[in-house]
Length: 78
Image 1 (cartoon, rainbow, N blue to C red):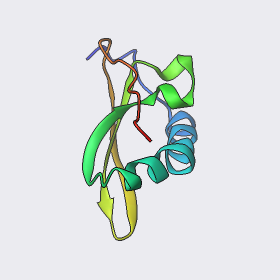
Image 2: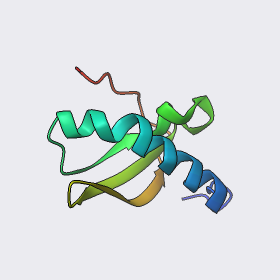
Image 3: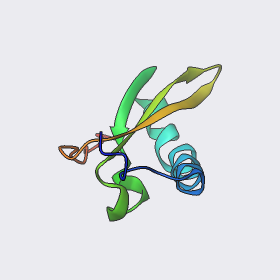
Image 4: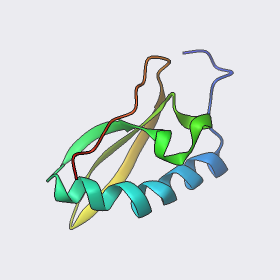
């Protein structure tokens, strides 16, 4: 990975907050347990980033972020 393509801690926190606000409820309805989804929910600037998550108790935890120039938005059927 190109070392110039990185998220700083503030960006990771911003994306994580939106993940828990916007995406976690949808993922719960889909019975998701572990995975990676594109970060387009955080805005066009982050459309090529993936957020890796796994279940933790009744919710989720963010495990990692990954840059993927081939990332594509997902249409969640809920």
